[in-house]
Length: 306
Image (cartoon, rainbow, N blue to C red; front, side, top):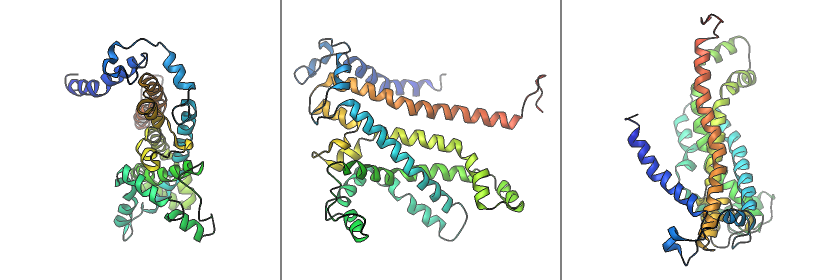
């Protein structure tokens, strides 16, 4: 307990105290006029939560609409990036000349800062002059003026960029899981006549279920809390389809100057983020327990391991 006490106090200082302040300010009427004396602001009760959930922000988007946009954005980005990461991990699992170089190339989107990726996406999806429009037009898949940065297409441009940014993280997790699989199992299955699909289906994929759960939870957490990409990619001319929950909180606070409602929305955001966080913690705790049971073997009624 003494060893973890410094870390616990540090965590409480940088996370617990600000969180407590946000929860308290979510019950107060705080605007631009009394932000300096927020501690003595009038009590608002739960009206901030009611106004935050149903009332639109300065962009005309309510919190409930932003929740749906954020969930759709997070789920689609995770579902699209996971198979890409899986096949990328399979492609560099076996040894071959140039494998190290290919692994390094796969990590390029992961090491680029998020704001740089957002700026590159803004240039790439620019109407008529962007690389995406030119490529799709050359392949006869879309007109030269698709308008990716305005209207409903902006959501898909944001999602495609998020997939490109996050799939190397899932790839690293899956590659670590692949390398932990015993090659003796794969060699024995090959000797028994199992083809690559049988080995993949009955040996590789079952042993990666825990890694998949971790990757799904962590990537979903990242997508739900990603503020940099939608904020920088679209600037001040923001389409309604890209107003995720973190963006909505920002506009309520720093454009609408309703800090009480913004705090209530932030608390609501924490509750939503707690769901994938709970899945992550459950997987982290369950996997070692299952591994220990498997290593010991089933226990008889007398308490002896068979």
